[in-house]
Image 1: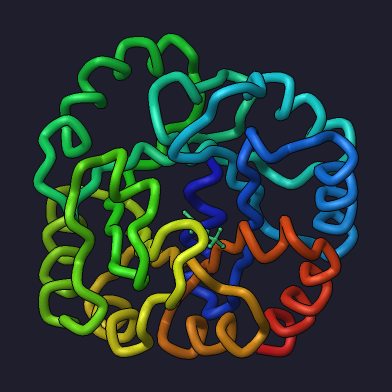
Image 2 (image 1 turned 90 degrees about the horizontal axis):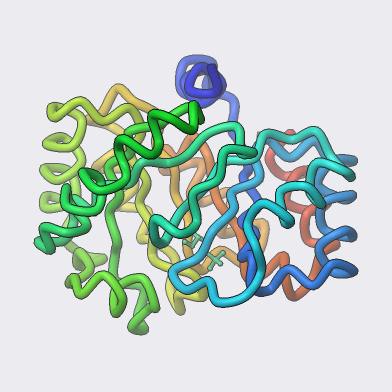
Length: 244
Ligand code: 1GP
């Protein structure tokens, strides 16, 4: 079960790195370069998904990833259209920072029977969108207000509630392309309280920001945009991760 791999990061204190691939930005040449580097540098997870996916067929992108690397592929779906049985697991995201019932439980009811038939491992995930200084597609599309980046007590209470409701992972996300990554005080306040693995992402563009998130208590950090723009960054980020 892939959940155990996430849990191992929490229990061992080692740090994980996930590379986010947006299927719509996955032109095959750029994507192959990124996944080959990810494989060489022992990236821990490939997350696949986006708030808006218009063109590329998820199954075809997974086939391409599989042809070049053996890293587990975890769906990070912006909608039910992005579910696919070829993935290793799916983050079953409940947007606990928001108050839009469709993203808390509505869409889940619609897709649950379909997911069960698919047989993909389901990872119940409390998803917290945090204000990253710009309005993100995720916040716009989900019609939800992100959690303030300077209110650690709200973040802590939200994550705790998610864990008490049975979620196995907490994902704090400033949203793709955020201007400011999640504040370290916010990560610390959540990491110190929850027992389940903590995933952090959004707006991380360099080694210092990666290290800051790890030090604050993130178990797995997700980087998308910055790697899309400069695939070589994978090497520097994984070096930093291994030094930690
Ligand atoms: C977004 O957490 C991910 O949902 C990654 O964000 O693309 O800004 O790295 P970036």
